Length: 219
Image (cartoon, rainbow, N blue to C red):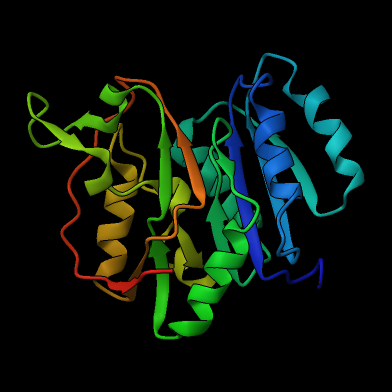
């Protein structure tokens, strides 16, 4: 394990979610695979976020930075710019990891060395209607969230992610746009191991259906 070059950099962007943040941070700290750093990017929060985070900074694998409010893409990209890991991944501040999430993705990487970008592998928590989102191309049509790119599940080689310029500054479907751009230059992999716990309410976000042919790994 090396704090200068961990295997994973976890970028956790947050905005006014102090009450939900401990569950996300605890799920990172409890990972069975321990070679990680977590970059907590406070996107201009006005609640108790900074005080909540302070208790975690005793573990030097956690790093904290506060930036002016810039939205999801801007906050994630601020974390990417600081990432020192070989691979960068994400955790939304109202979601959590299962304990073996990072271990699962490390195994995927070892089994599929040609892959530079992994996504997928989540368990959805929420009411039944939360499993569907408006299609960005036709908002009157609902599509399954399982057919969309979920940015929290992205695991990307850090050098590739930085060369792609990170997440685009668009109002919705930024995850899809990054995935689509990456699919033109690197091999994409899909995990079906549901170790990312995606907690959502109905009416959150829009997305576009994925249209790339990935390498699939069932575990």
